[in-house]
Image (cartoon, rainbow, N blue to C red; front, side, top):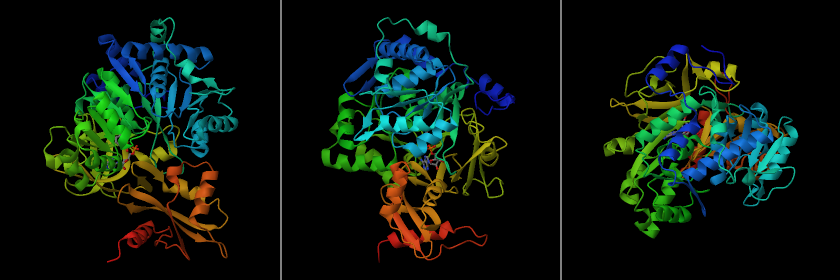
Length: 550
Ligand code: J2J
């Protein structure tokens, strides 16, 4: 193997050689694919966001001008920037400027607060933070200032909208250039295709999320392979409503896939159906992606408003958490679109149902890998392969599945075995190759697609003096699939209620989606034979309490 390049755990040389030979790695940085699309059709609309529409020419001119401006500011190729931008044009132009200049965006979520951002800023040693001025009544610029104060490497805060000194206006950095001529100069800086294009956050199980380095080579192939399977063409109009820093809307095929093929990407900050449907009708959206809870809301909304507004929608991609078969069966009849189930992970592997699969596959499986280069094993607890039809843990490796997390050698030893990444998902492989997700053996709660690490929540809750023992578990929820329930055992004489826990976690700067939604106080938490808290029992306990009384 080669030495690590900027935190990337390298693929073994023979695998890398095969990936190149097969044409999966094309040794081109991400930005070039978008420039190609722009050269083919410069006047086509590339990006729509609220009132703003950018053609391909305008998009790449802005991105290259922005690349020059951020370099002039003092950022250098391979520097990391923490990006916490909502789904708006600035996200896309800034990401593209980073890909062009070799500056590496670290993809944080708008929901993150100082607990998450401080950690990410320090781990990735970011030199800048890009935030909106505010979202609703939350002041993101103040948040960025707070993070910068504790992370000494941060030199710049870049803010959209109303910018207060010392922050710098991101809107100015991303503005249309007066003299569009940056392209050749930026071309000359083309990042090495094996260097990181961006850092994604793992929906991991450890105390704090791991960072996933995605190289230009691997990520471009992720985009290209999924764009083929999702049938993207230059006629595609893609609606991005999930937070664009998630792998799914960003690159599976998402916004990047759309821009690679010369389609139109439409950004919406929320999947709320009234505006969502109006946007689909106005822009003649052909494909959108959603988590199951959003698909459910759209189906409910469509019952109220009729079908007209969705006439253009051909494909609805759904993934992030397990879609119940009953819900999957309603997509085609009620929304008039082909359902594409997506079982993916920011760590790489993407499975998708094919658009022309039989109904049975589309409705009751989570699809199969998008690339011939994806290798999959399904194994038992001892790591032995199980036959098709038998549930087991999925292991995977391939041309767009990195071989390790950023700066996490110890964790990598457990999560990657001989290059095989174990996501902790329990799946059944059918004889036709399609996977069905049965459950998981990892300690996280999947709240409608947002992943919550139980350990992360517990670590914070242990800071409460009243808490002797804590266990965060998932409880079933009809809409989100799961929500977070916190079990605690208290110190003698102490008491605690849910509001106190939530207020404390908010004070600690934890993203709101990680706050427990139910608290159970027990005299003693049940332990397993080896003395660990018996979470299986707790999950059953809360599920029993929630089940409707017969
Ligand atoms: C069951 N569980 C699923 C599905 C993901 C596309 C789609 C999703 C993600 C994503 C992504 C699931 N049914 N259809 O990155 O590009 C759970 C699994 C998996 C974890 C990964 C993409 N689709 N999951 O959700 O990195 O447990 O990526 O291991 O956030 O989500 O989470 P994440």
